[in-house]
Length: 119
Length: 108
Image (cartoon, rainbow over all chains, first blue to last red):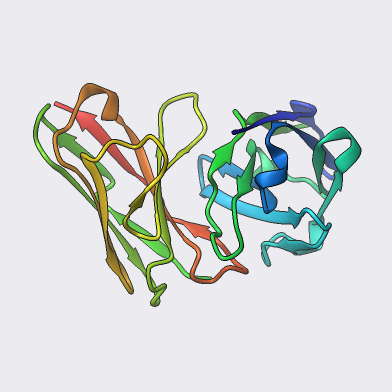
């Protein structure tokens, strides 16, 4: 089993950059990809992107120009950076895991962190 | 992007009755479909993957079926703890994963 916990600021100003971290505990070696998903009232659940254990990344084409993901294996953490924020980025942000190649669904989730973009 | 459409938006079912939820993909995704359950204030929880395989710990009264573009989630005997929003997610296009808009299941 793996446990995930998101952390980061709850309030960010428009045009600024959001930085979130997901801390992983438990059997992290069994996970294949680490991913971020957000949930808004308007667009529902939206996949943001993923990072592999080797550090390769894939991003949602609609967010690709503003997203960067990274990981720090020594701290069992992976991170999301989202630039040029607008009110439309207000959402609950979840980190989650993908268990195996080809199995691109999300089998473990963090509890989520609410982010508000407001002046 | 592959668009996932769920229906109905809200489903009201009496305890012990069957609930049938639909999910349609805008193009064929074979059996690359997952279902999630989300209760208020909680993260989504994986129920089904591969269109019909139950995730660990999911009771057998919850089942999934379908392939191609049409999928169904069935809860055979609804219980109070099944009150939640249910989402489908396609992974046929693994480079652009997308979710449906959800079906809210209410207990009458």
